[in-house]
Length: 100
Image (cartoon, rainbow, N blue to C red; front, side, top):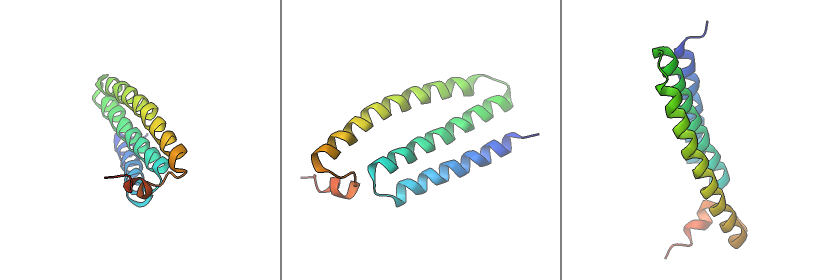
């Protein structure tokens, strides 16, 4: 039988992979996917905790996180595509030059 501890360990691994992806990679799309991976790790934690406690609060929280993530994807990808069309690169280092 799989205990909630296994789900929490998997969520911690997924969150760590996402955090490393943000810190190491300099491509905006990869960083964006890493943020989504971190959000999914948090969703897994909410569902595991809700299931363990026998309440639906975890699933309701996941619904709201998914709605916010969908809005973030819509706006974020539009910005990334617009910048890519203008600069022909998705590197965040090149975007730092746009300051000023």
